[in-house]
Length: 157
Image (cartoon, rainbow, N blue to C red):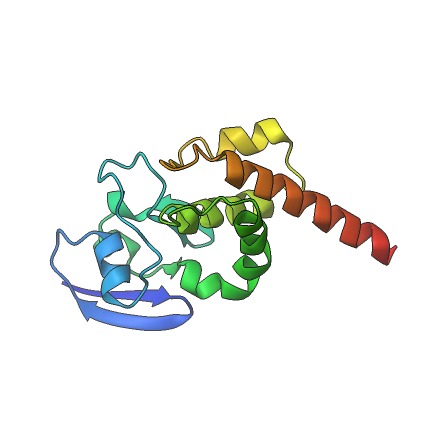
């Protein structure tokens, strides 16, 4: 089955099997940040953006993404780098396996709500699992990033 996906700004045309998952498609095309953690759509490690909305790539067929734009963390390096440093500063990446999914979902949250409350952050990230820290470090990193961002904006005024 021939599909066309705009992956991180690059048009990819590929012949795939009808049962190929989107996670396997993006990984086959070099996007190794997308992880397979649970295979039951419960961990958030496979989060990608499809047409700018976060989705779980382990629960979508690649064929269903044909004709759409798919963005992985590799396609968001500039946007993710600044925020990712705050996650690292909080020791939230003991093993680092879950961080790409956390970062993708946090970026989606920031796009949806510029300054979410702590409760909104917890609710939004409830589908992300971190076996090392239980995502407390990620939460501290997000709060530190938001405080820094607000301070930076106030300094411009």
